[in-house]
Amino acid sequence: MSHYYTEDPSSPLKTRTIEVCIRGHCFKFITASGVFSFGKLDRGTELLLKSMVLERGWRVLDLGCGYGVIGIVASRFVSYVVMTDINRRAVSIARKNLKINNVRNAEVRWGNLYEPVENEKFDAIITNPPVHAGKDVLREIVINAPQHLNDGGMLQLVIKTSQGARYIKSLMEEKFTEVMELAKGSGYRVYAGIA
Ligand SMILES: C[S@@+](CC[C@H](N)C(=O)[O-])C[C@H]1O[C@@H](n2cnc3c(N)ncnc32)[C@H](O)[C@@H]1O
Image (cartoon, rainbow, N blue to C red):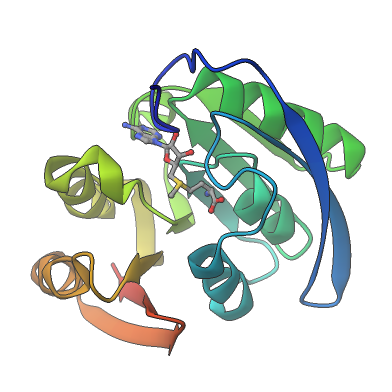
């Protein structure tokens, strides 16, 4: 069995298109087997989409973009979005989703964690992190975030309360000047760390 965070899912490709209306805009998303949250919007992602802080003029990184919902929603409110994922099928589907939503101020790059954005800085890194990839991956995402953030930039992430929220929050408190809880609900928490 292949997981959504593998590089090349081996499952036969099945797709299903969904509509998501959020923050005053409606979007169409192709979702795919072998890519996180096939056929639906994940509940944690939904909480993050509703509560994420976005400002005009910002450059945003959507780390682990899956089919691209976070980056594509963010693109309506900020200046530019870079979306990345290690799953090649996710990258290909997210690129299609940019097209069908007429998004011109975003791009999708393939690669591991921050490798596709080496030496680049953002005003926000926004992620529903790959919890099933293990604690080390979560740790890498948090501890390396500040070097990819401008001064005052924010790491914004959603995490299941029962799947490491306390661990993530304490890591963020070590690495960021200030950590806030932006939202909680449906068993998830959204945290923001200010660099
Ligand atoms: C929980 S899913 C979130 C997907 C999407 N952002 C959403 O909210 O629907 C985490 C994503 O991280 C990706 N991922 C896992 N390990 C990764 C790594 N080492 N580098 C980059 N992306 C990774 C997975 O392929 C998956 O798409």
